[in-house]
Length: 277
Ligand code: HEM
Image (cartoon, rainbow, N blue to C red; front, top):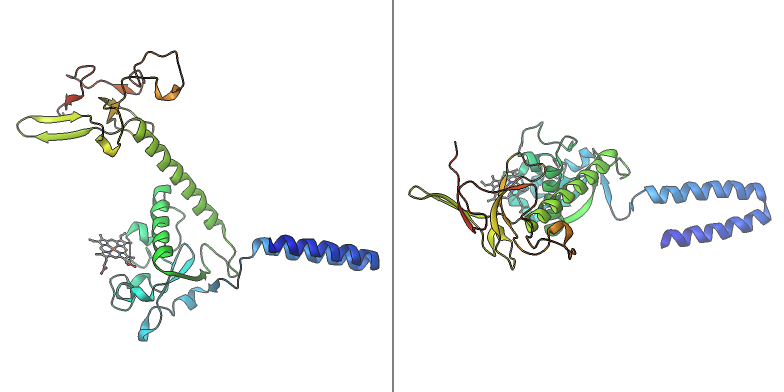
């Protein structure tokens, strides 16, 4: 809103200036565009202090001073967590640095304590984001740190874009997995020396509360090398065509990614688990 007002006022000023002196107006237009572009790119520096790495390194809590840490380029005041991060604390190596990578690798050596997260997988980026959310919830954000994520005036660097991209990918994957779990809830399972293994379905198996029980099937889902036991709906339309009126009333039983467990009846809610060879 502020930016729009600035732009509107600037255009009025330019028109007036053109009427007054066209060359002056042309120069003014150039300046306005440069400033407005800068406004787009530059962060609100009043709100965030930009730390250099050396500056951040002075906040390790020595002599009872403040303790700051960086994560994904964001600096948090963790002084109230001094027992963890202050001198002698179990996580003192996180103080005064952005060691984003170590939050997911658990490698707290010198080379592990780095902000270079370029080789992390989407799922690891999601775990890192969970740590960042933890700090946002429990501690105060005090700035950004110049490094792999932000430059010296706080502009996002390519790694920040990669981080966002990988995070989006991870959230999408998580959604797909969750959706898959809703359609094909995992089975209950048990094993005993006397009776061997058994798998079965209930209206709550796999933690998915539903109004149908289903029957166990081996489910080969995309991206998983091994099949898993899924409870499969046996009535109504198939999940991929829920609005169909012309269906066989067999639920998802005809899904080609499913197969029947050996020694199990077609419609049995419980099956013996085949012995592993
Ligand atoms: C990647 C591995 C790990 C990382 C990055 C990590 C990181 C952390 C951090 C940052 C804190 C402080 C949280 C705060 O500000 O309140 C913490 C606390 C804690 N961590 Fe870990 N941790 C890891 C693994 C473990 C493991 C394997 C254990 C247990 C065997 C563990 C046990 C604890 C406990 C008990 C606390 C709380 C201590 C207290 O409140 O006094 N952590 N962890």
